[in-house]
Length: 383
Ligand SMILES: *[C@@H]1O[C@H](CO)[C@@H](O)[C@H](O)[C@H]1NC(C)=O
Ligand SMILES: *[C@@H]1O[C@H](CO)[C@@H](O)[C@H](O)[C@H]1NC(C)=O
Image (cartoon, protein in one colour):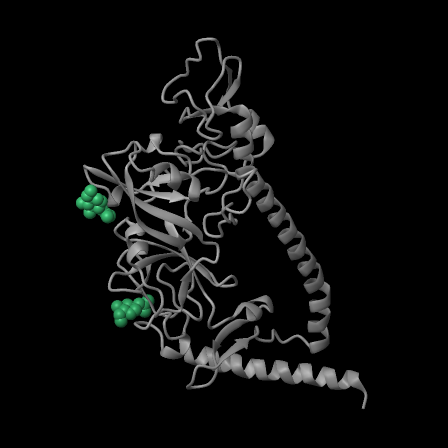
């Protein structure tokens, strides 16, 4: 038997069946979105507005009156901030603006979800007295929503900050509340920048089952097969009416260059990530946190001419800076010295070492202190 016609007919058969399955999926499931923008896809589904064949058990979502998407893992829902279906990741925040409280009490064991996979070890500490976030050691953040007038709850990242704060009889007098492996996310994370307050950041969750990664890679969408049971199938895009020969031509013509682009992009992104990680912790790569490009709030950096257009200052002997900056560069945390070149961000007037902020702005189009976008060549929004 000749192999080619066999392969060809198998492919045709496969396409035929996938179209049948596609029809079935269309019949049983209407697409839905809480915000009219981001469609909710399998395995997630909204029981109020979709049939149970649209999603997988454990992935039920609902909408609130602000058109936000909610996930209820316990009695209190979490707000879904973004879902990356190909990576099987989602980001959630707390409607009451205290996500660390939720993380401390959350039990994921009876849910399809887990923290991470890019989770890091955080230690939550209860310290006596009221602490100024600016005095905390590097790698720690205040959690104002858990703190009271006579105590401050702090999250430390990595062992160093924790050691500094849990010294018996030391200036901090902190007690460990809990150690948690979780992935907290905030705008422009990375580059040694921790939010001064971790109360209202995002937490990343992931799921393994059902796995639709392969299906997404093939350009299909996942769904339940048939009228009952939990068998998951991959629905490839419906035929556009092209003859099969043209379709295979398209796959060869567009698919392979596309694949090369993706491979190139992946290499580019991972080289940038490793460059960033090296910048963060030059000596201690073991505990270096996983920093990945944020798929939901991805901000690209500024171009050279835009950065150059921001005002430069050379510090005099008096080292006096216009308000509201103090004497330390918030990026590299070293004090300003006379004759050093600083750059400020227009509008918000935050000052940094020119070298530090230039590198930052090449990766992030936002001020690292106030987190808003400085004006770019065209858009002039305030910082
Ligand atoms: C979704 O379901 C709820 C409750 O059944 C209903 O009030 C709402 O109008 C539905 N939304 C859409 C867009 O169908
Ligand atoms: C922190 O300690 C204070 C007493 O020092 C206590 O009242 C408070 O509940 C503790 N907070 C947490 C989150 O453990």
